[in-house]
Length: 168
Image (cartoon, rainbow, N blue to C red):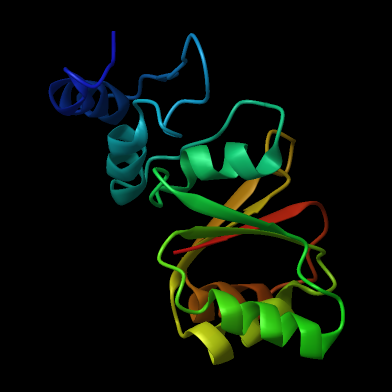
């Protein structure tokens, strides 16, 4: 069992098992683990230890990404796809600049570099996670500051697939 009353103690036990090479699945009888359910501490510990954390398929890419991002899950804002027109998109980002909750964006591979540049310019170099192709063969999570994610994407071939960007 893994619940609010034993989460701190059990996280260490589960991390020991993960370091030994075991696989661990956190499931919930209602809801999504680590999104207002136990699991957040384990995700943060695993990410800090460079142990891969992957979501299981669910009803929403945003919630799947949030469940494994290692960003605060107690309160978040779903943005969806930002406006296509630059002026409107910059207005949206400016309105969100003071938002303390985790931000969840969807974006296309063709526009992701531009969005990252604009977030950097308007909101600063916050920590983020770019989730790509979750629960599929080429699943990938790129973690770091917005500038680090931007740099890593610029240094490689153009990416494909569905993208969910989470920003602290």
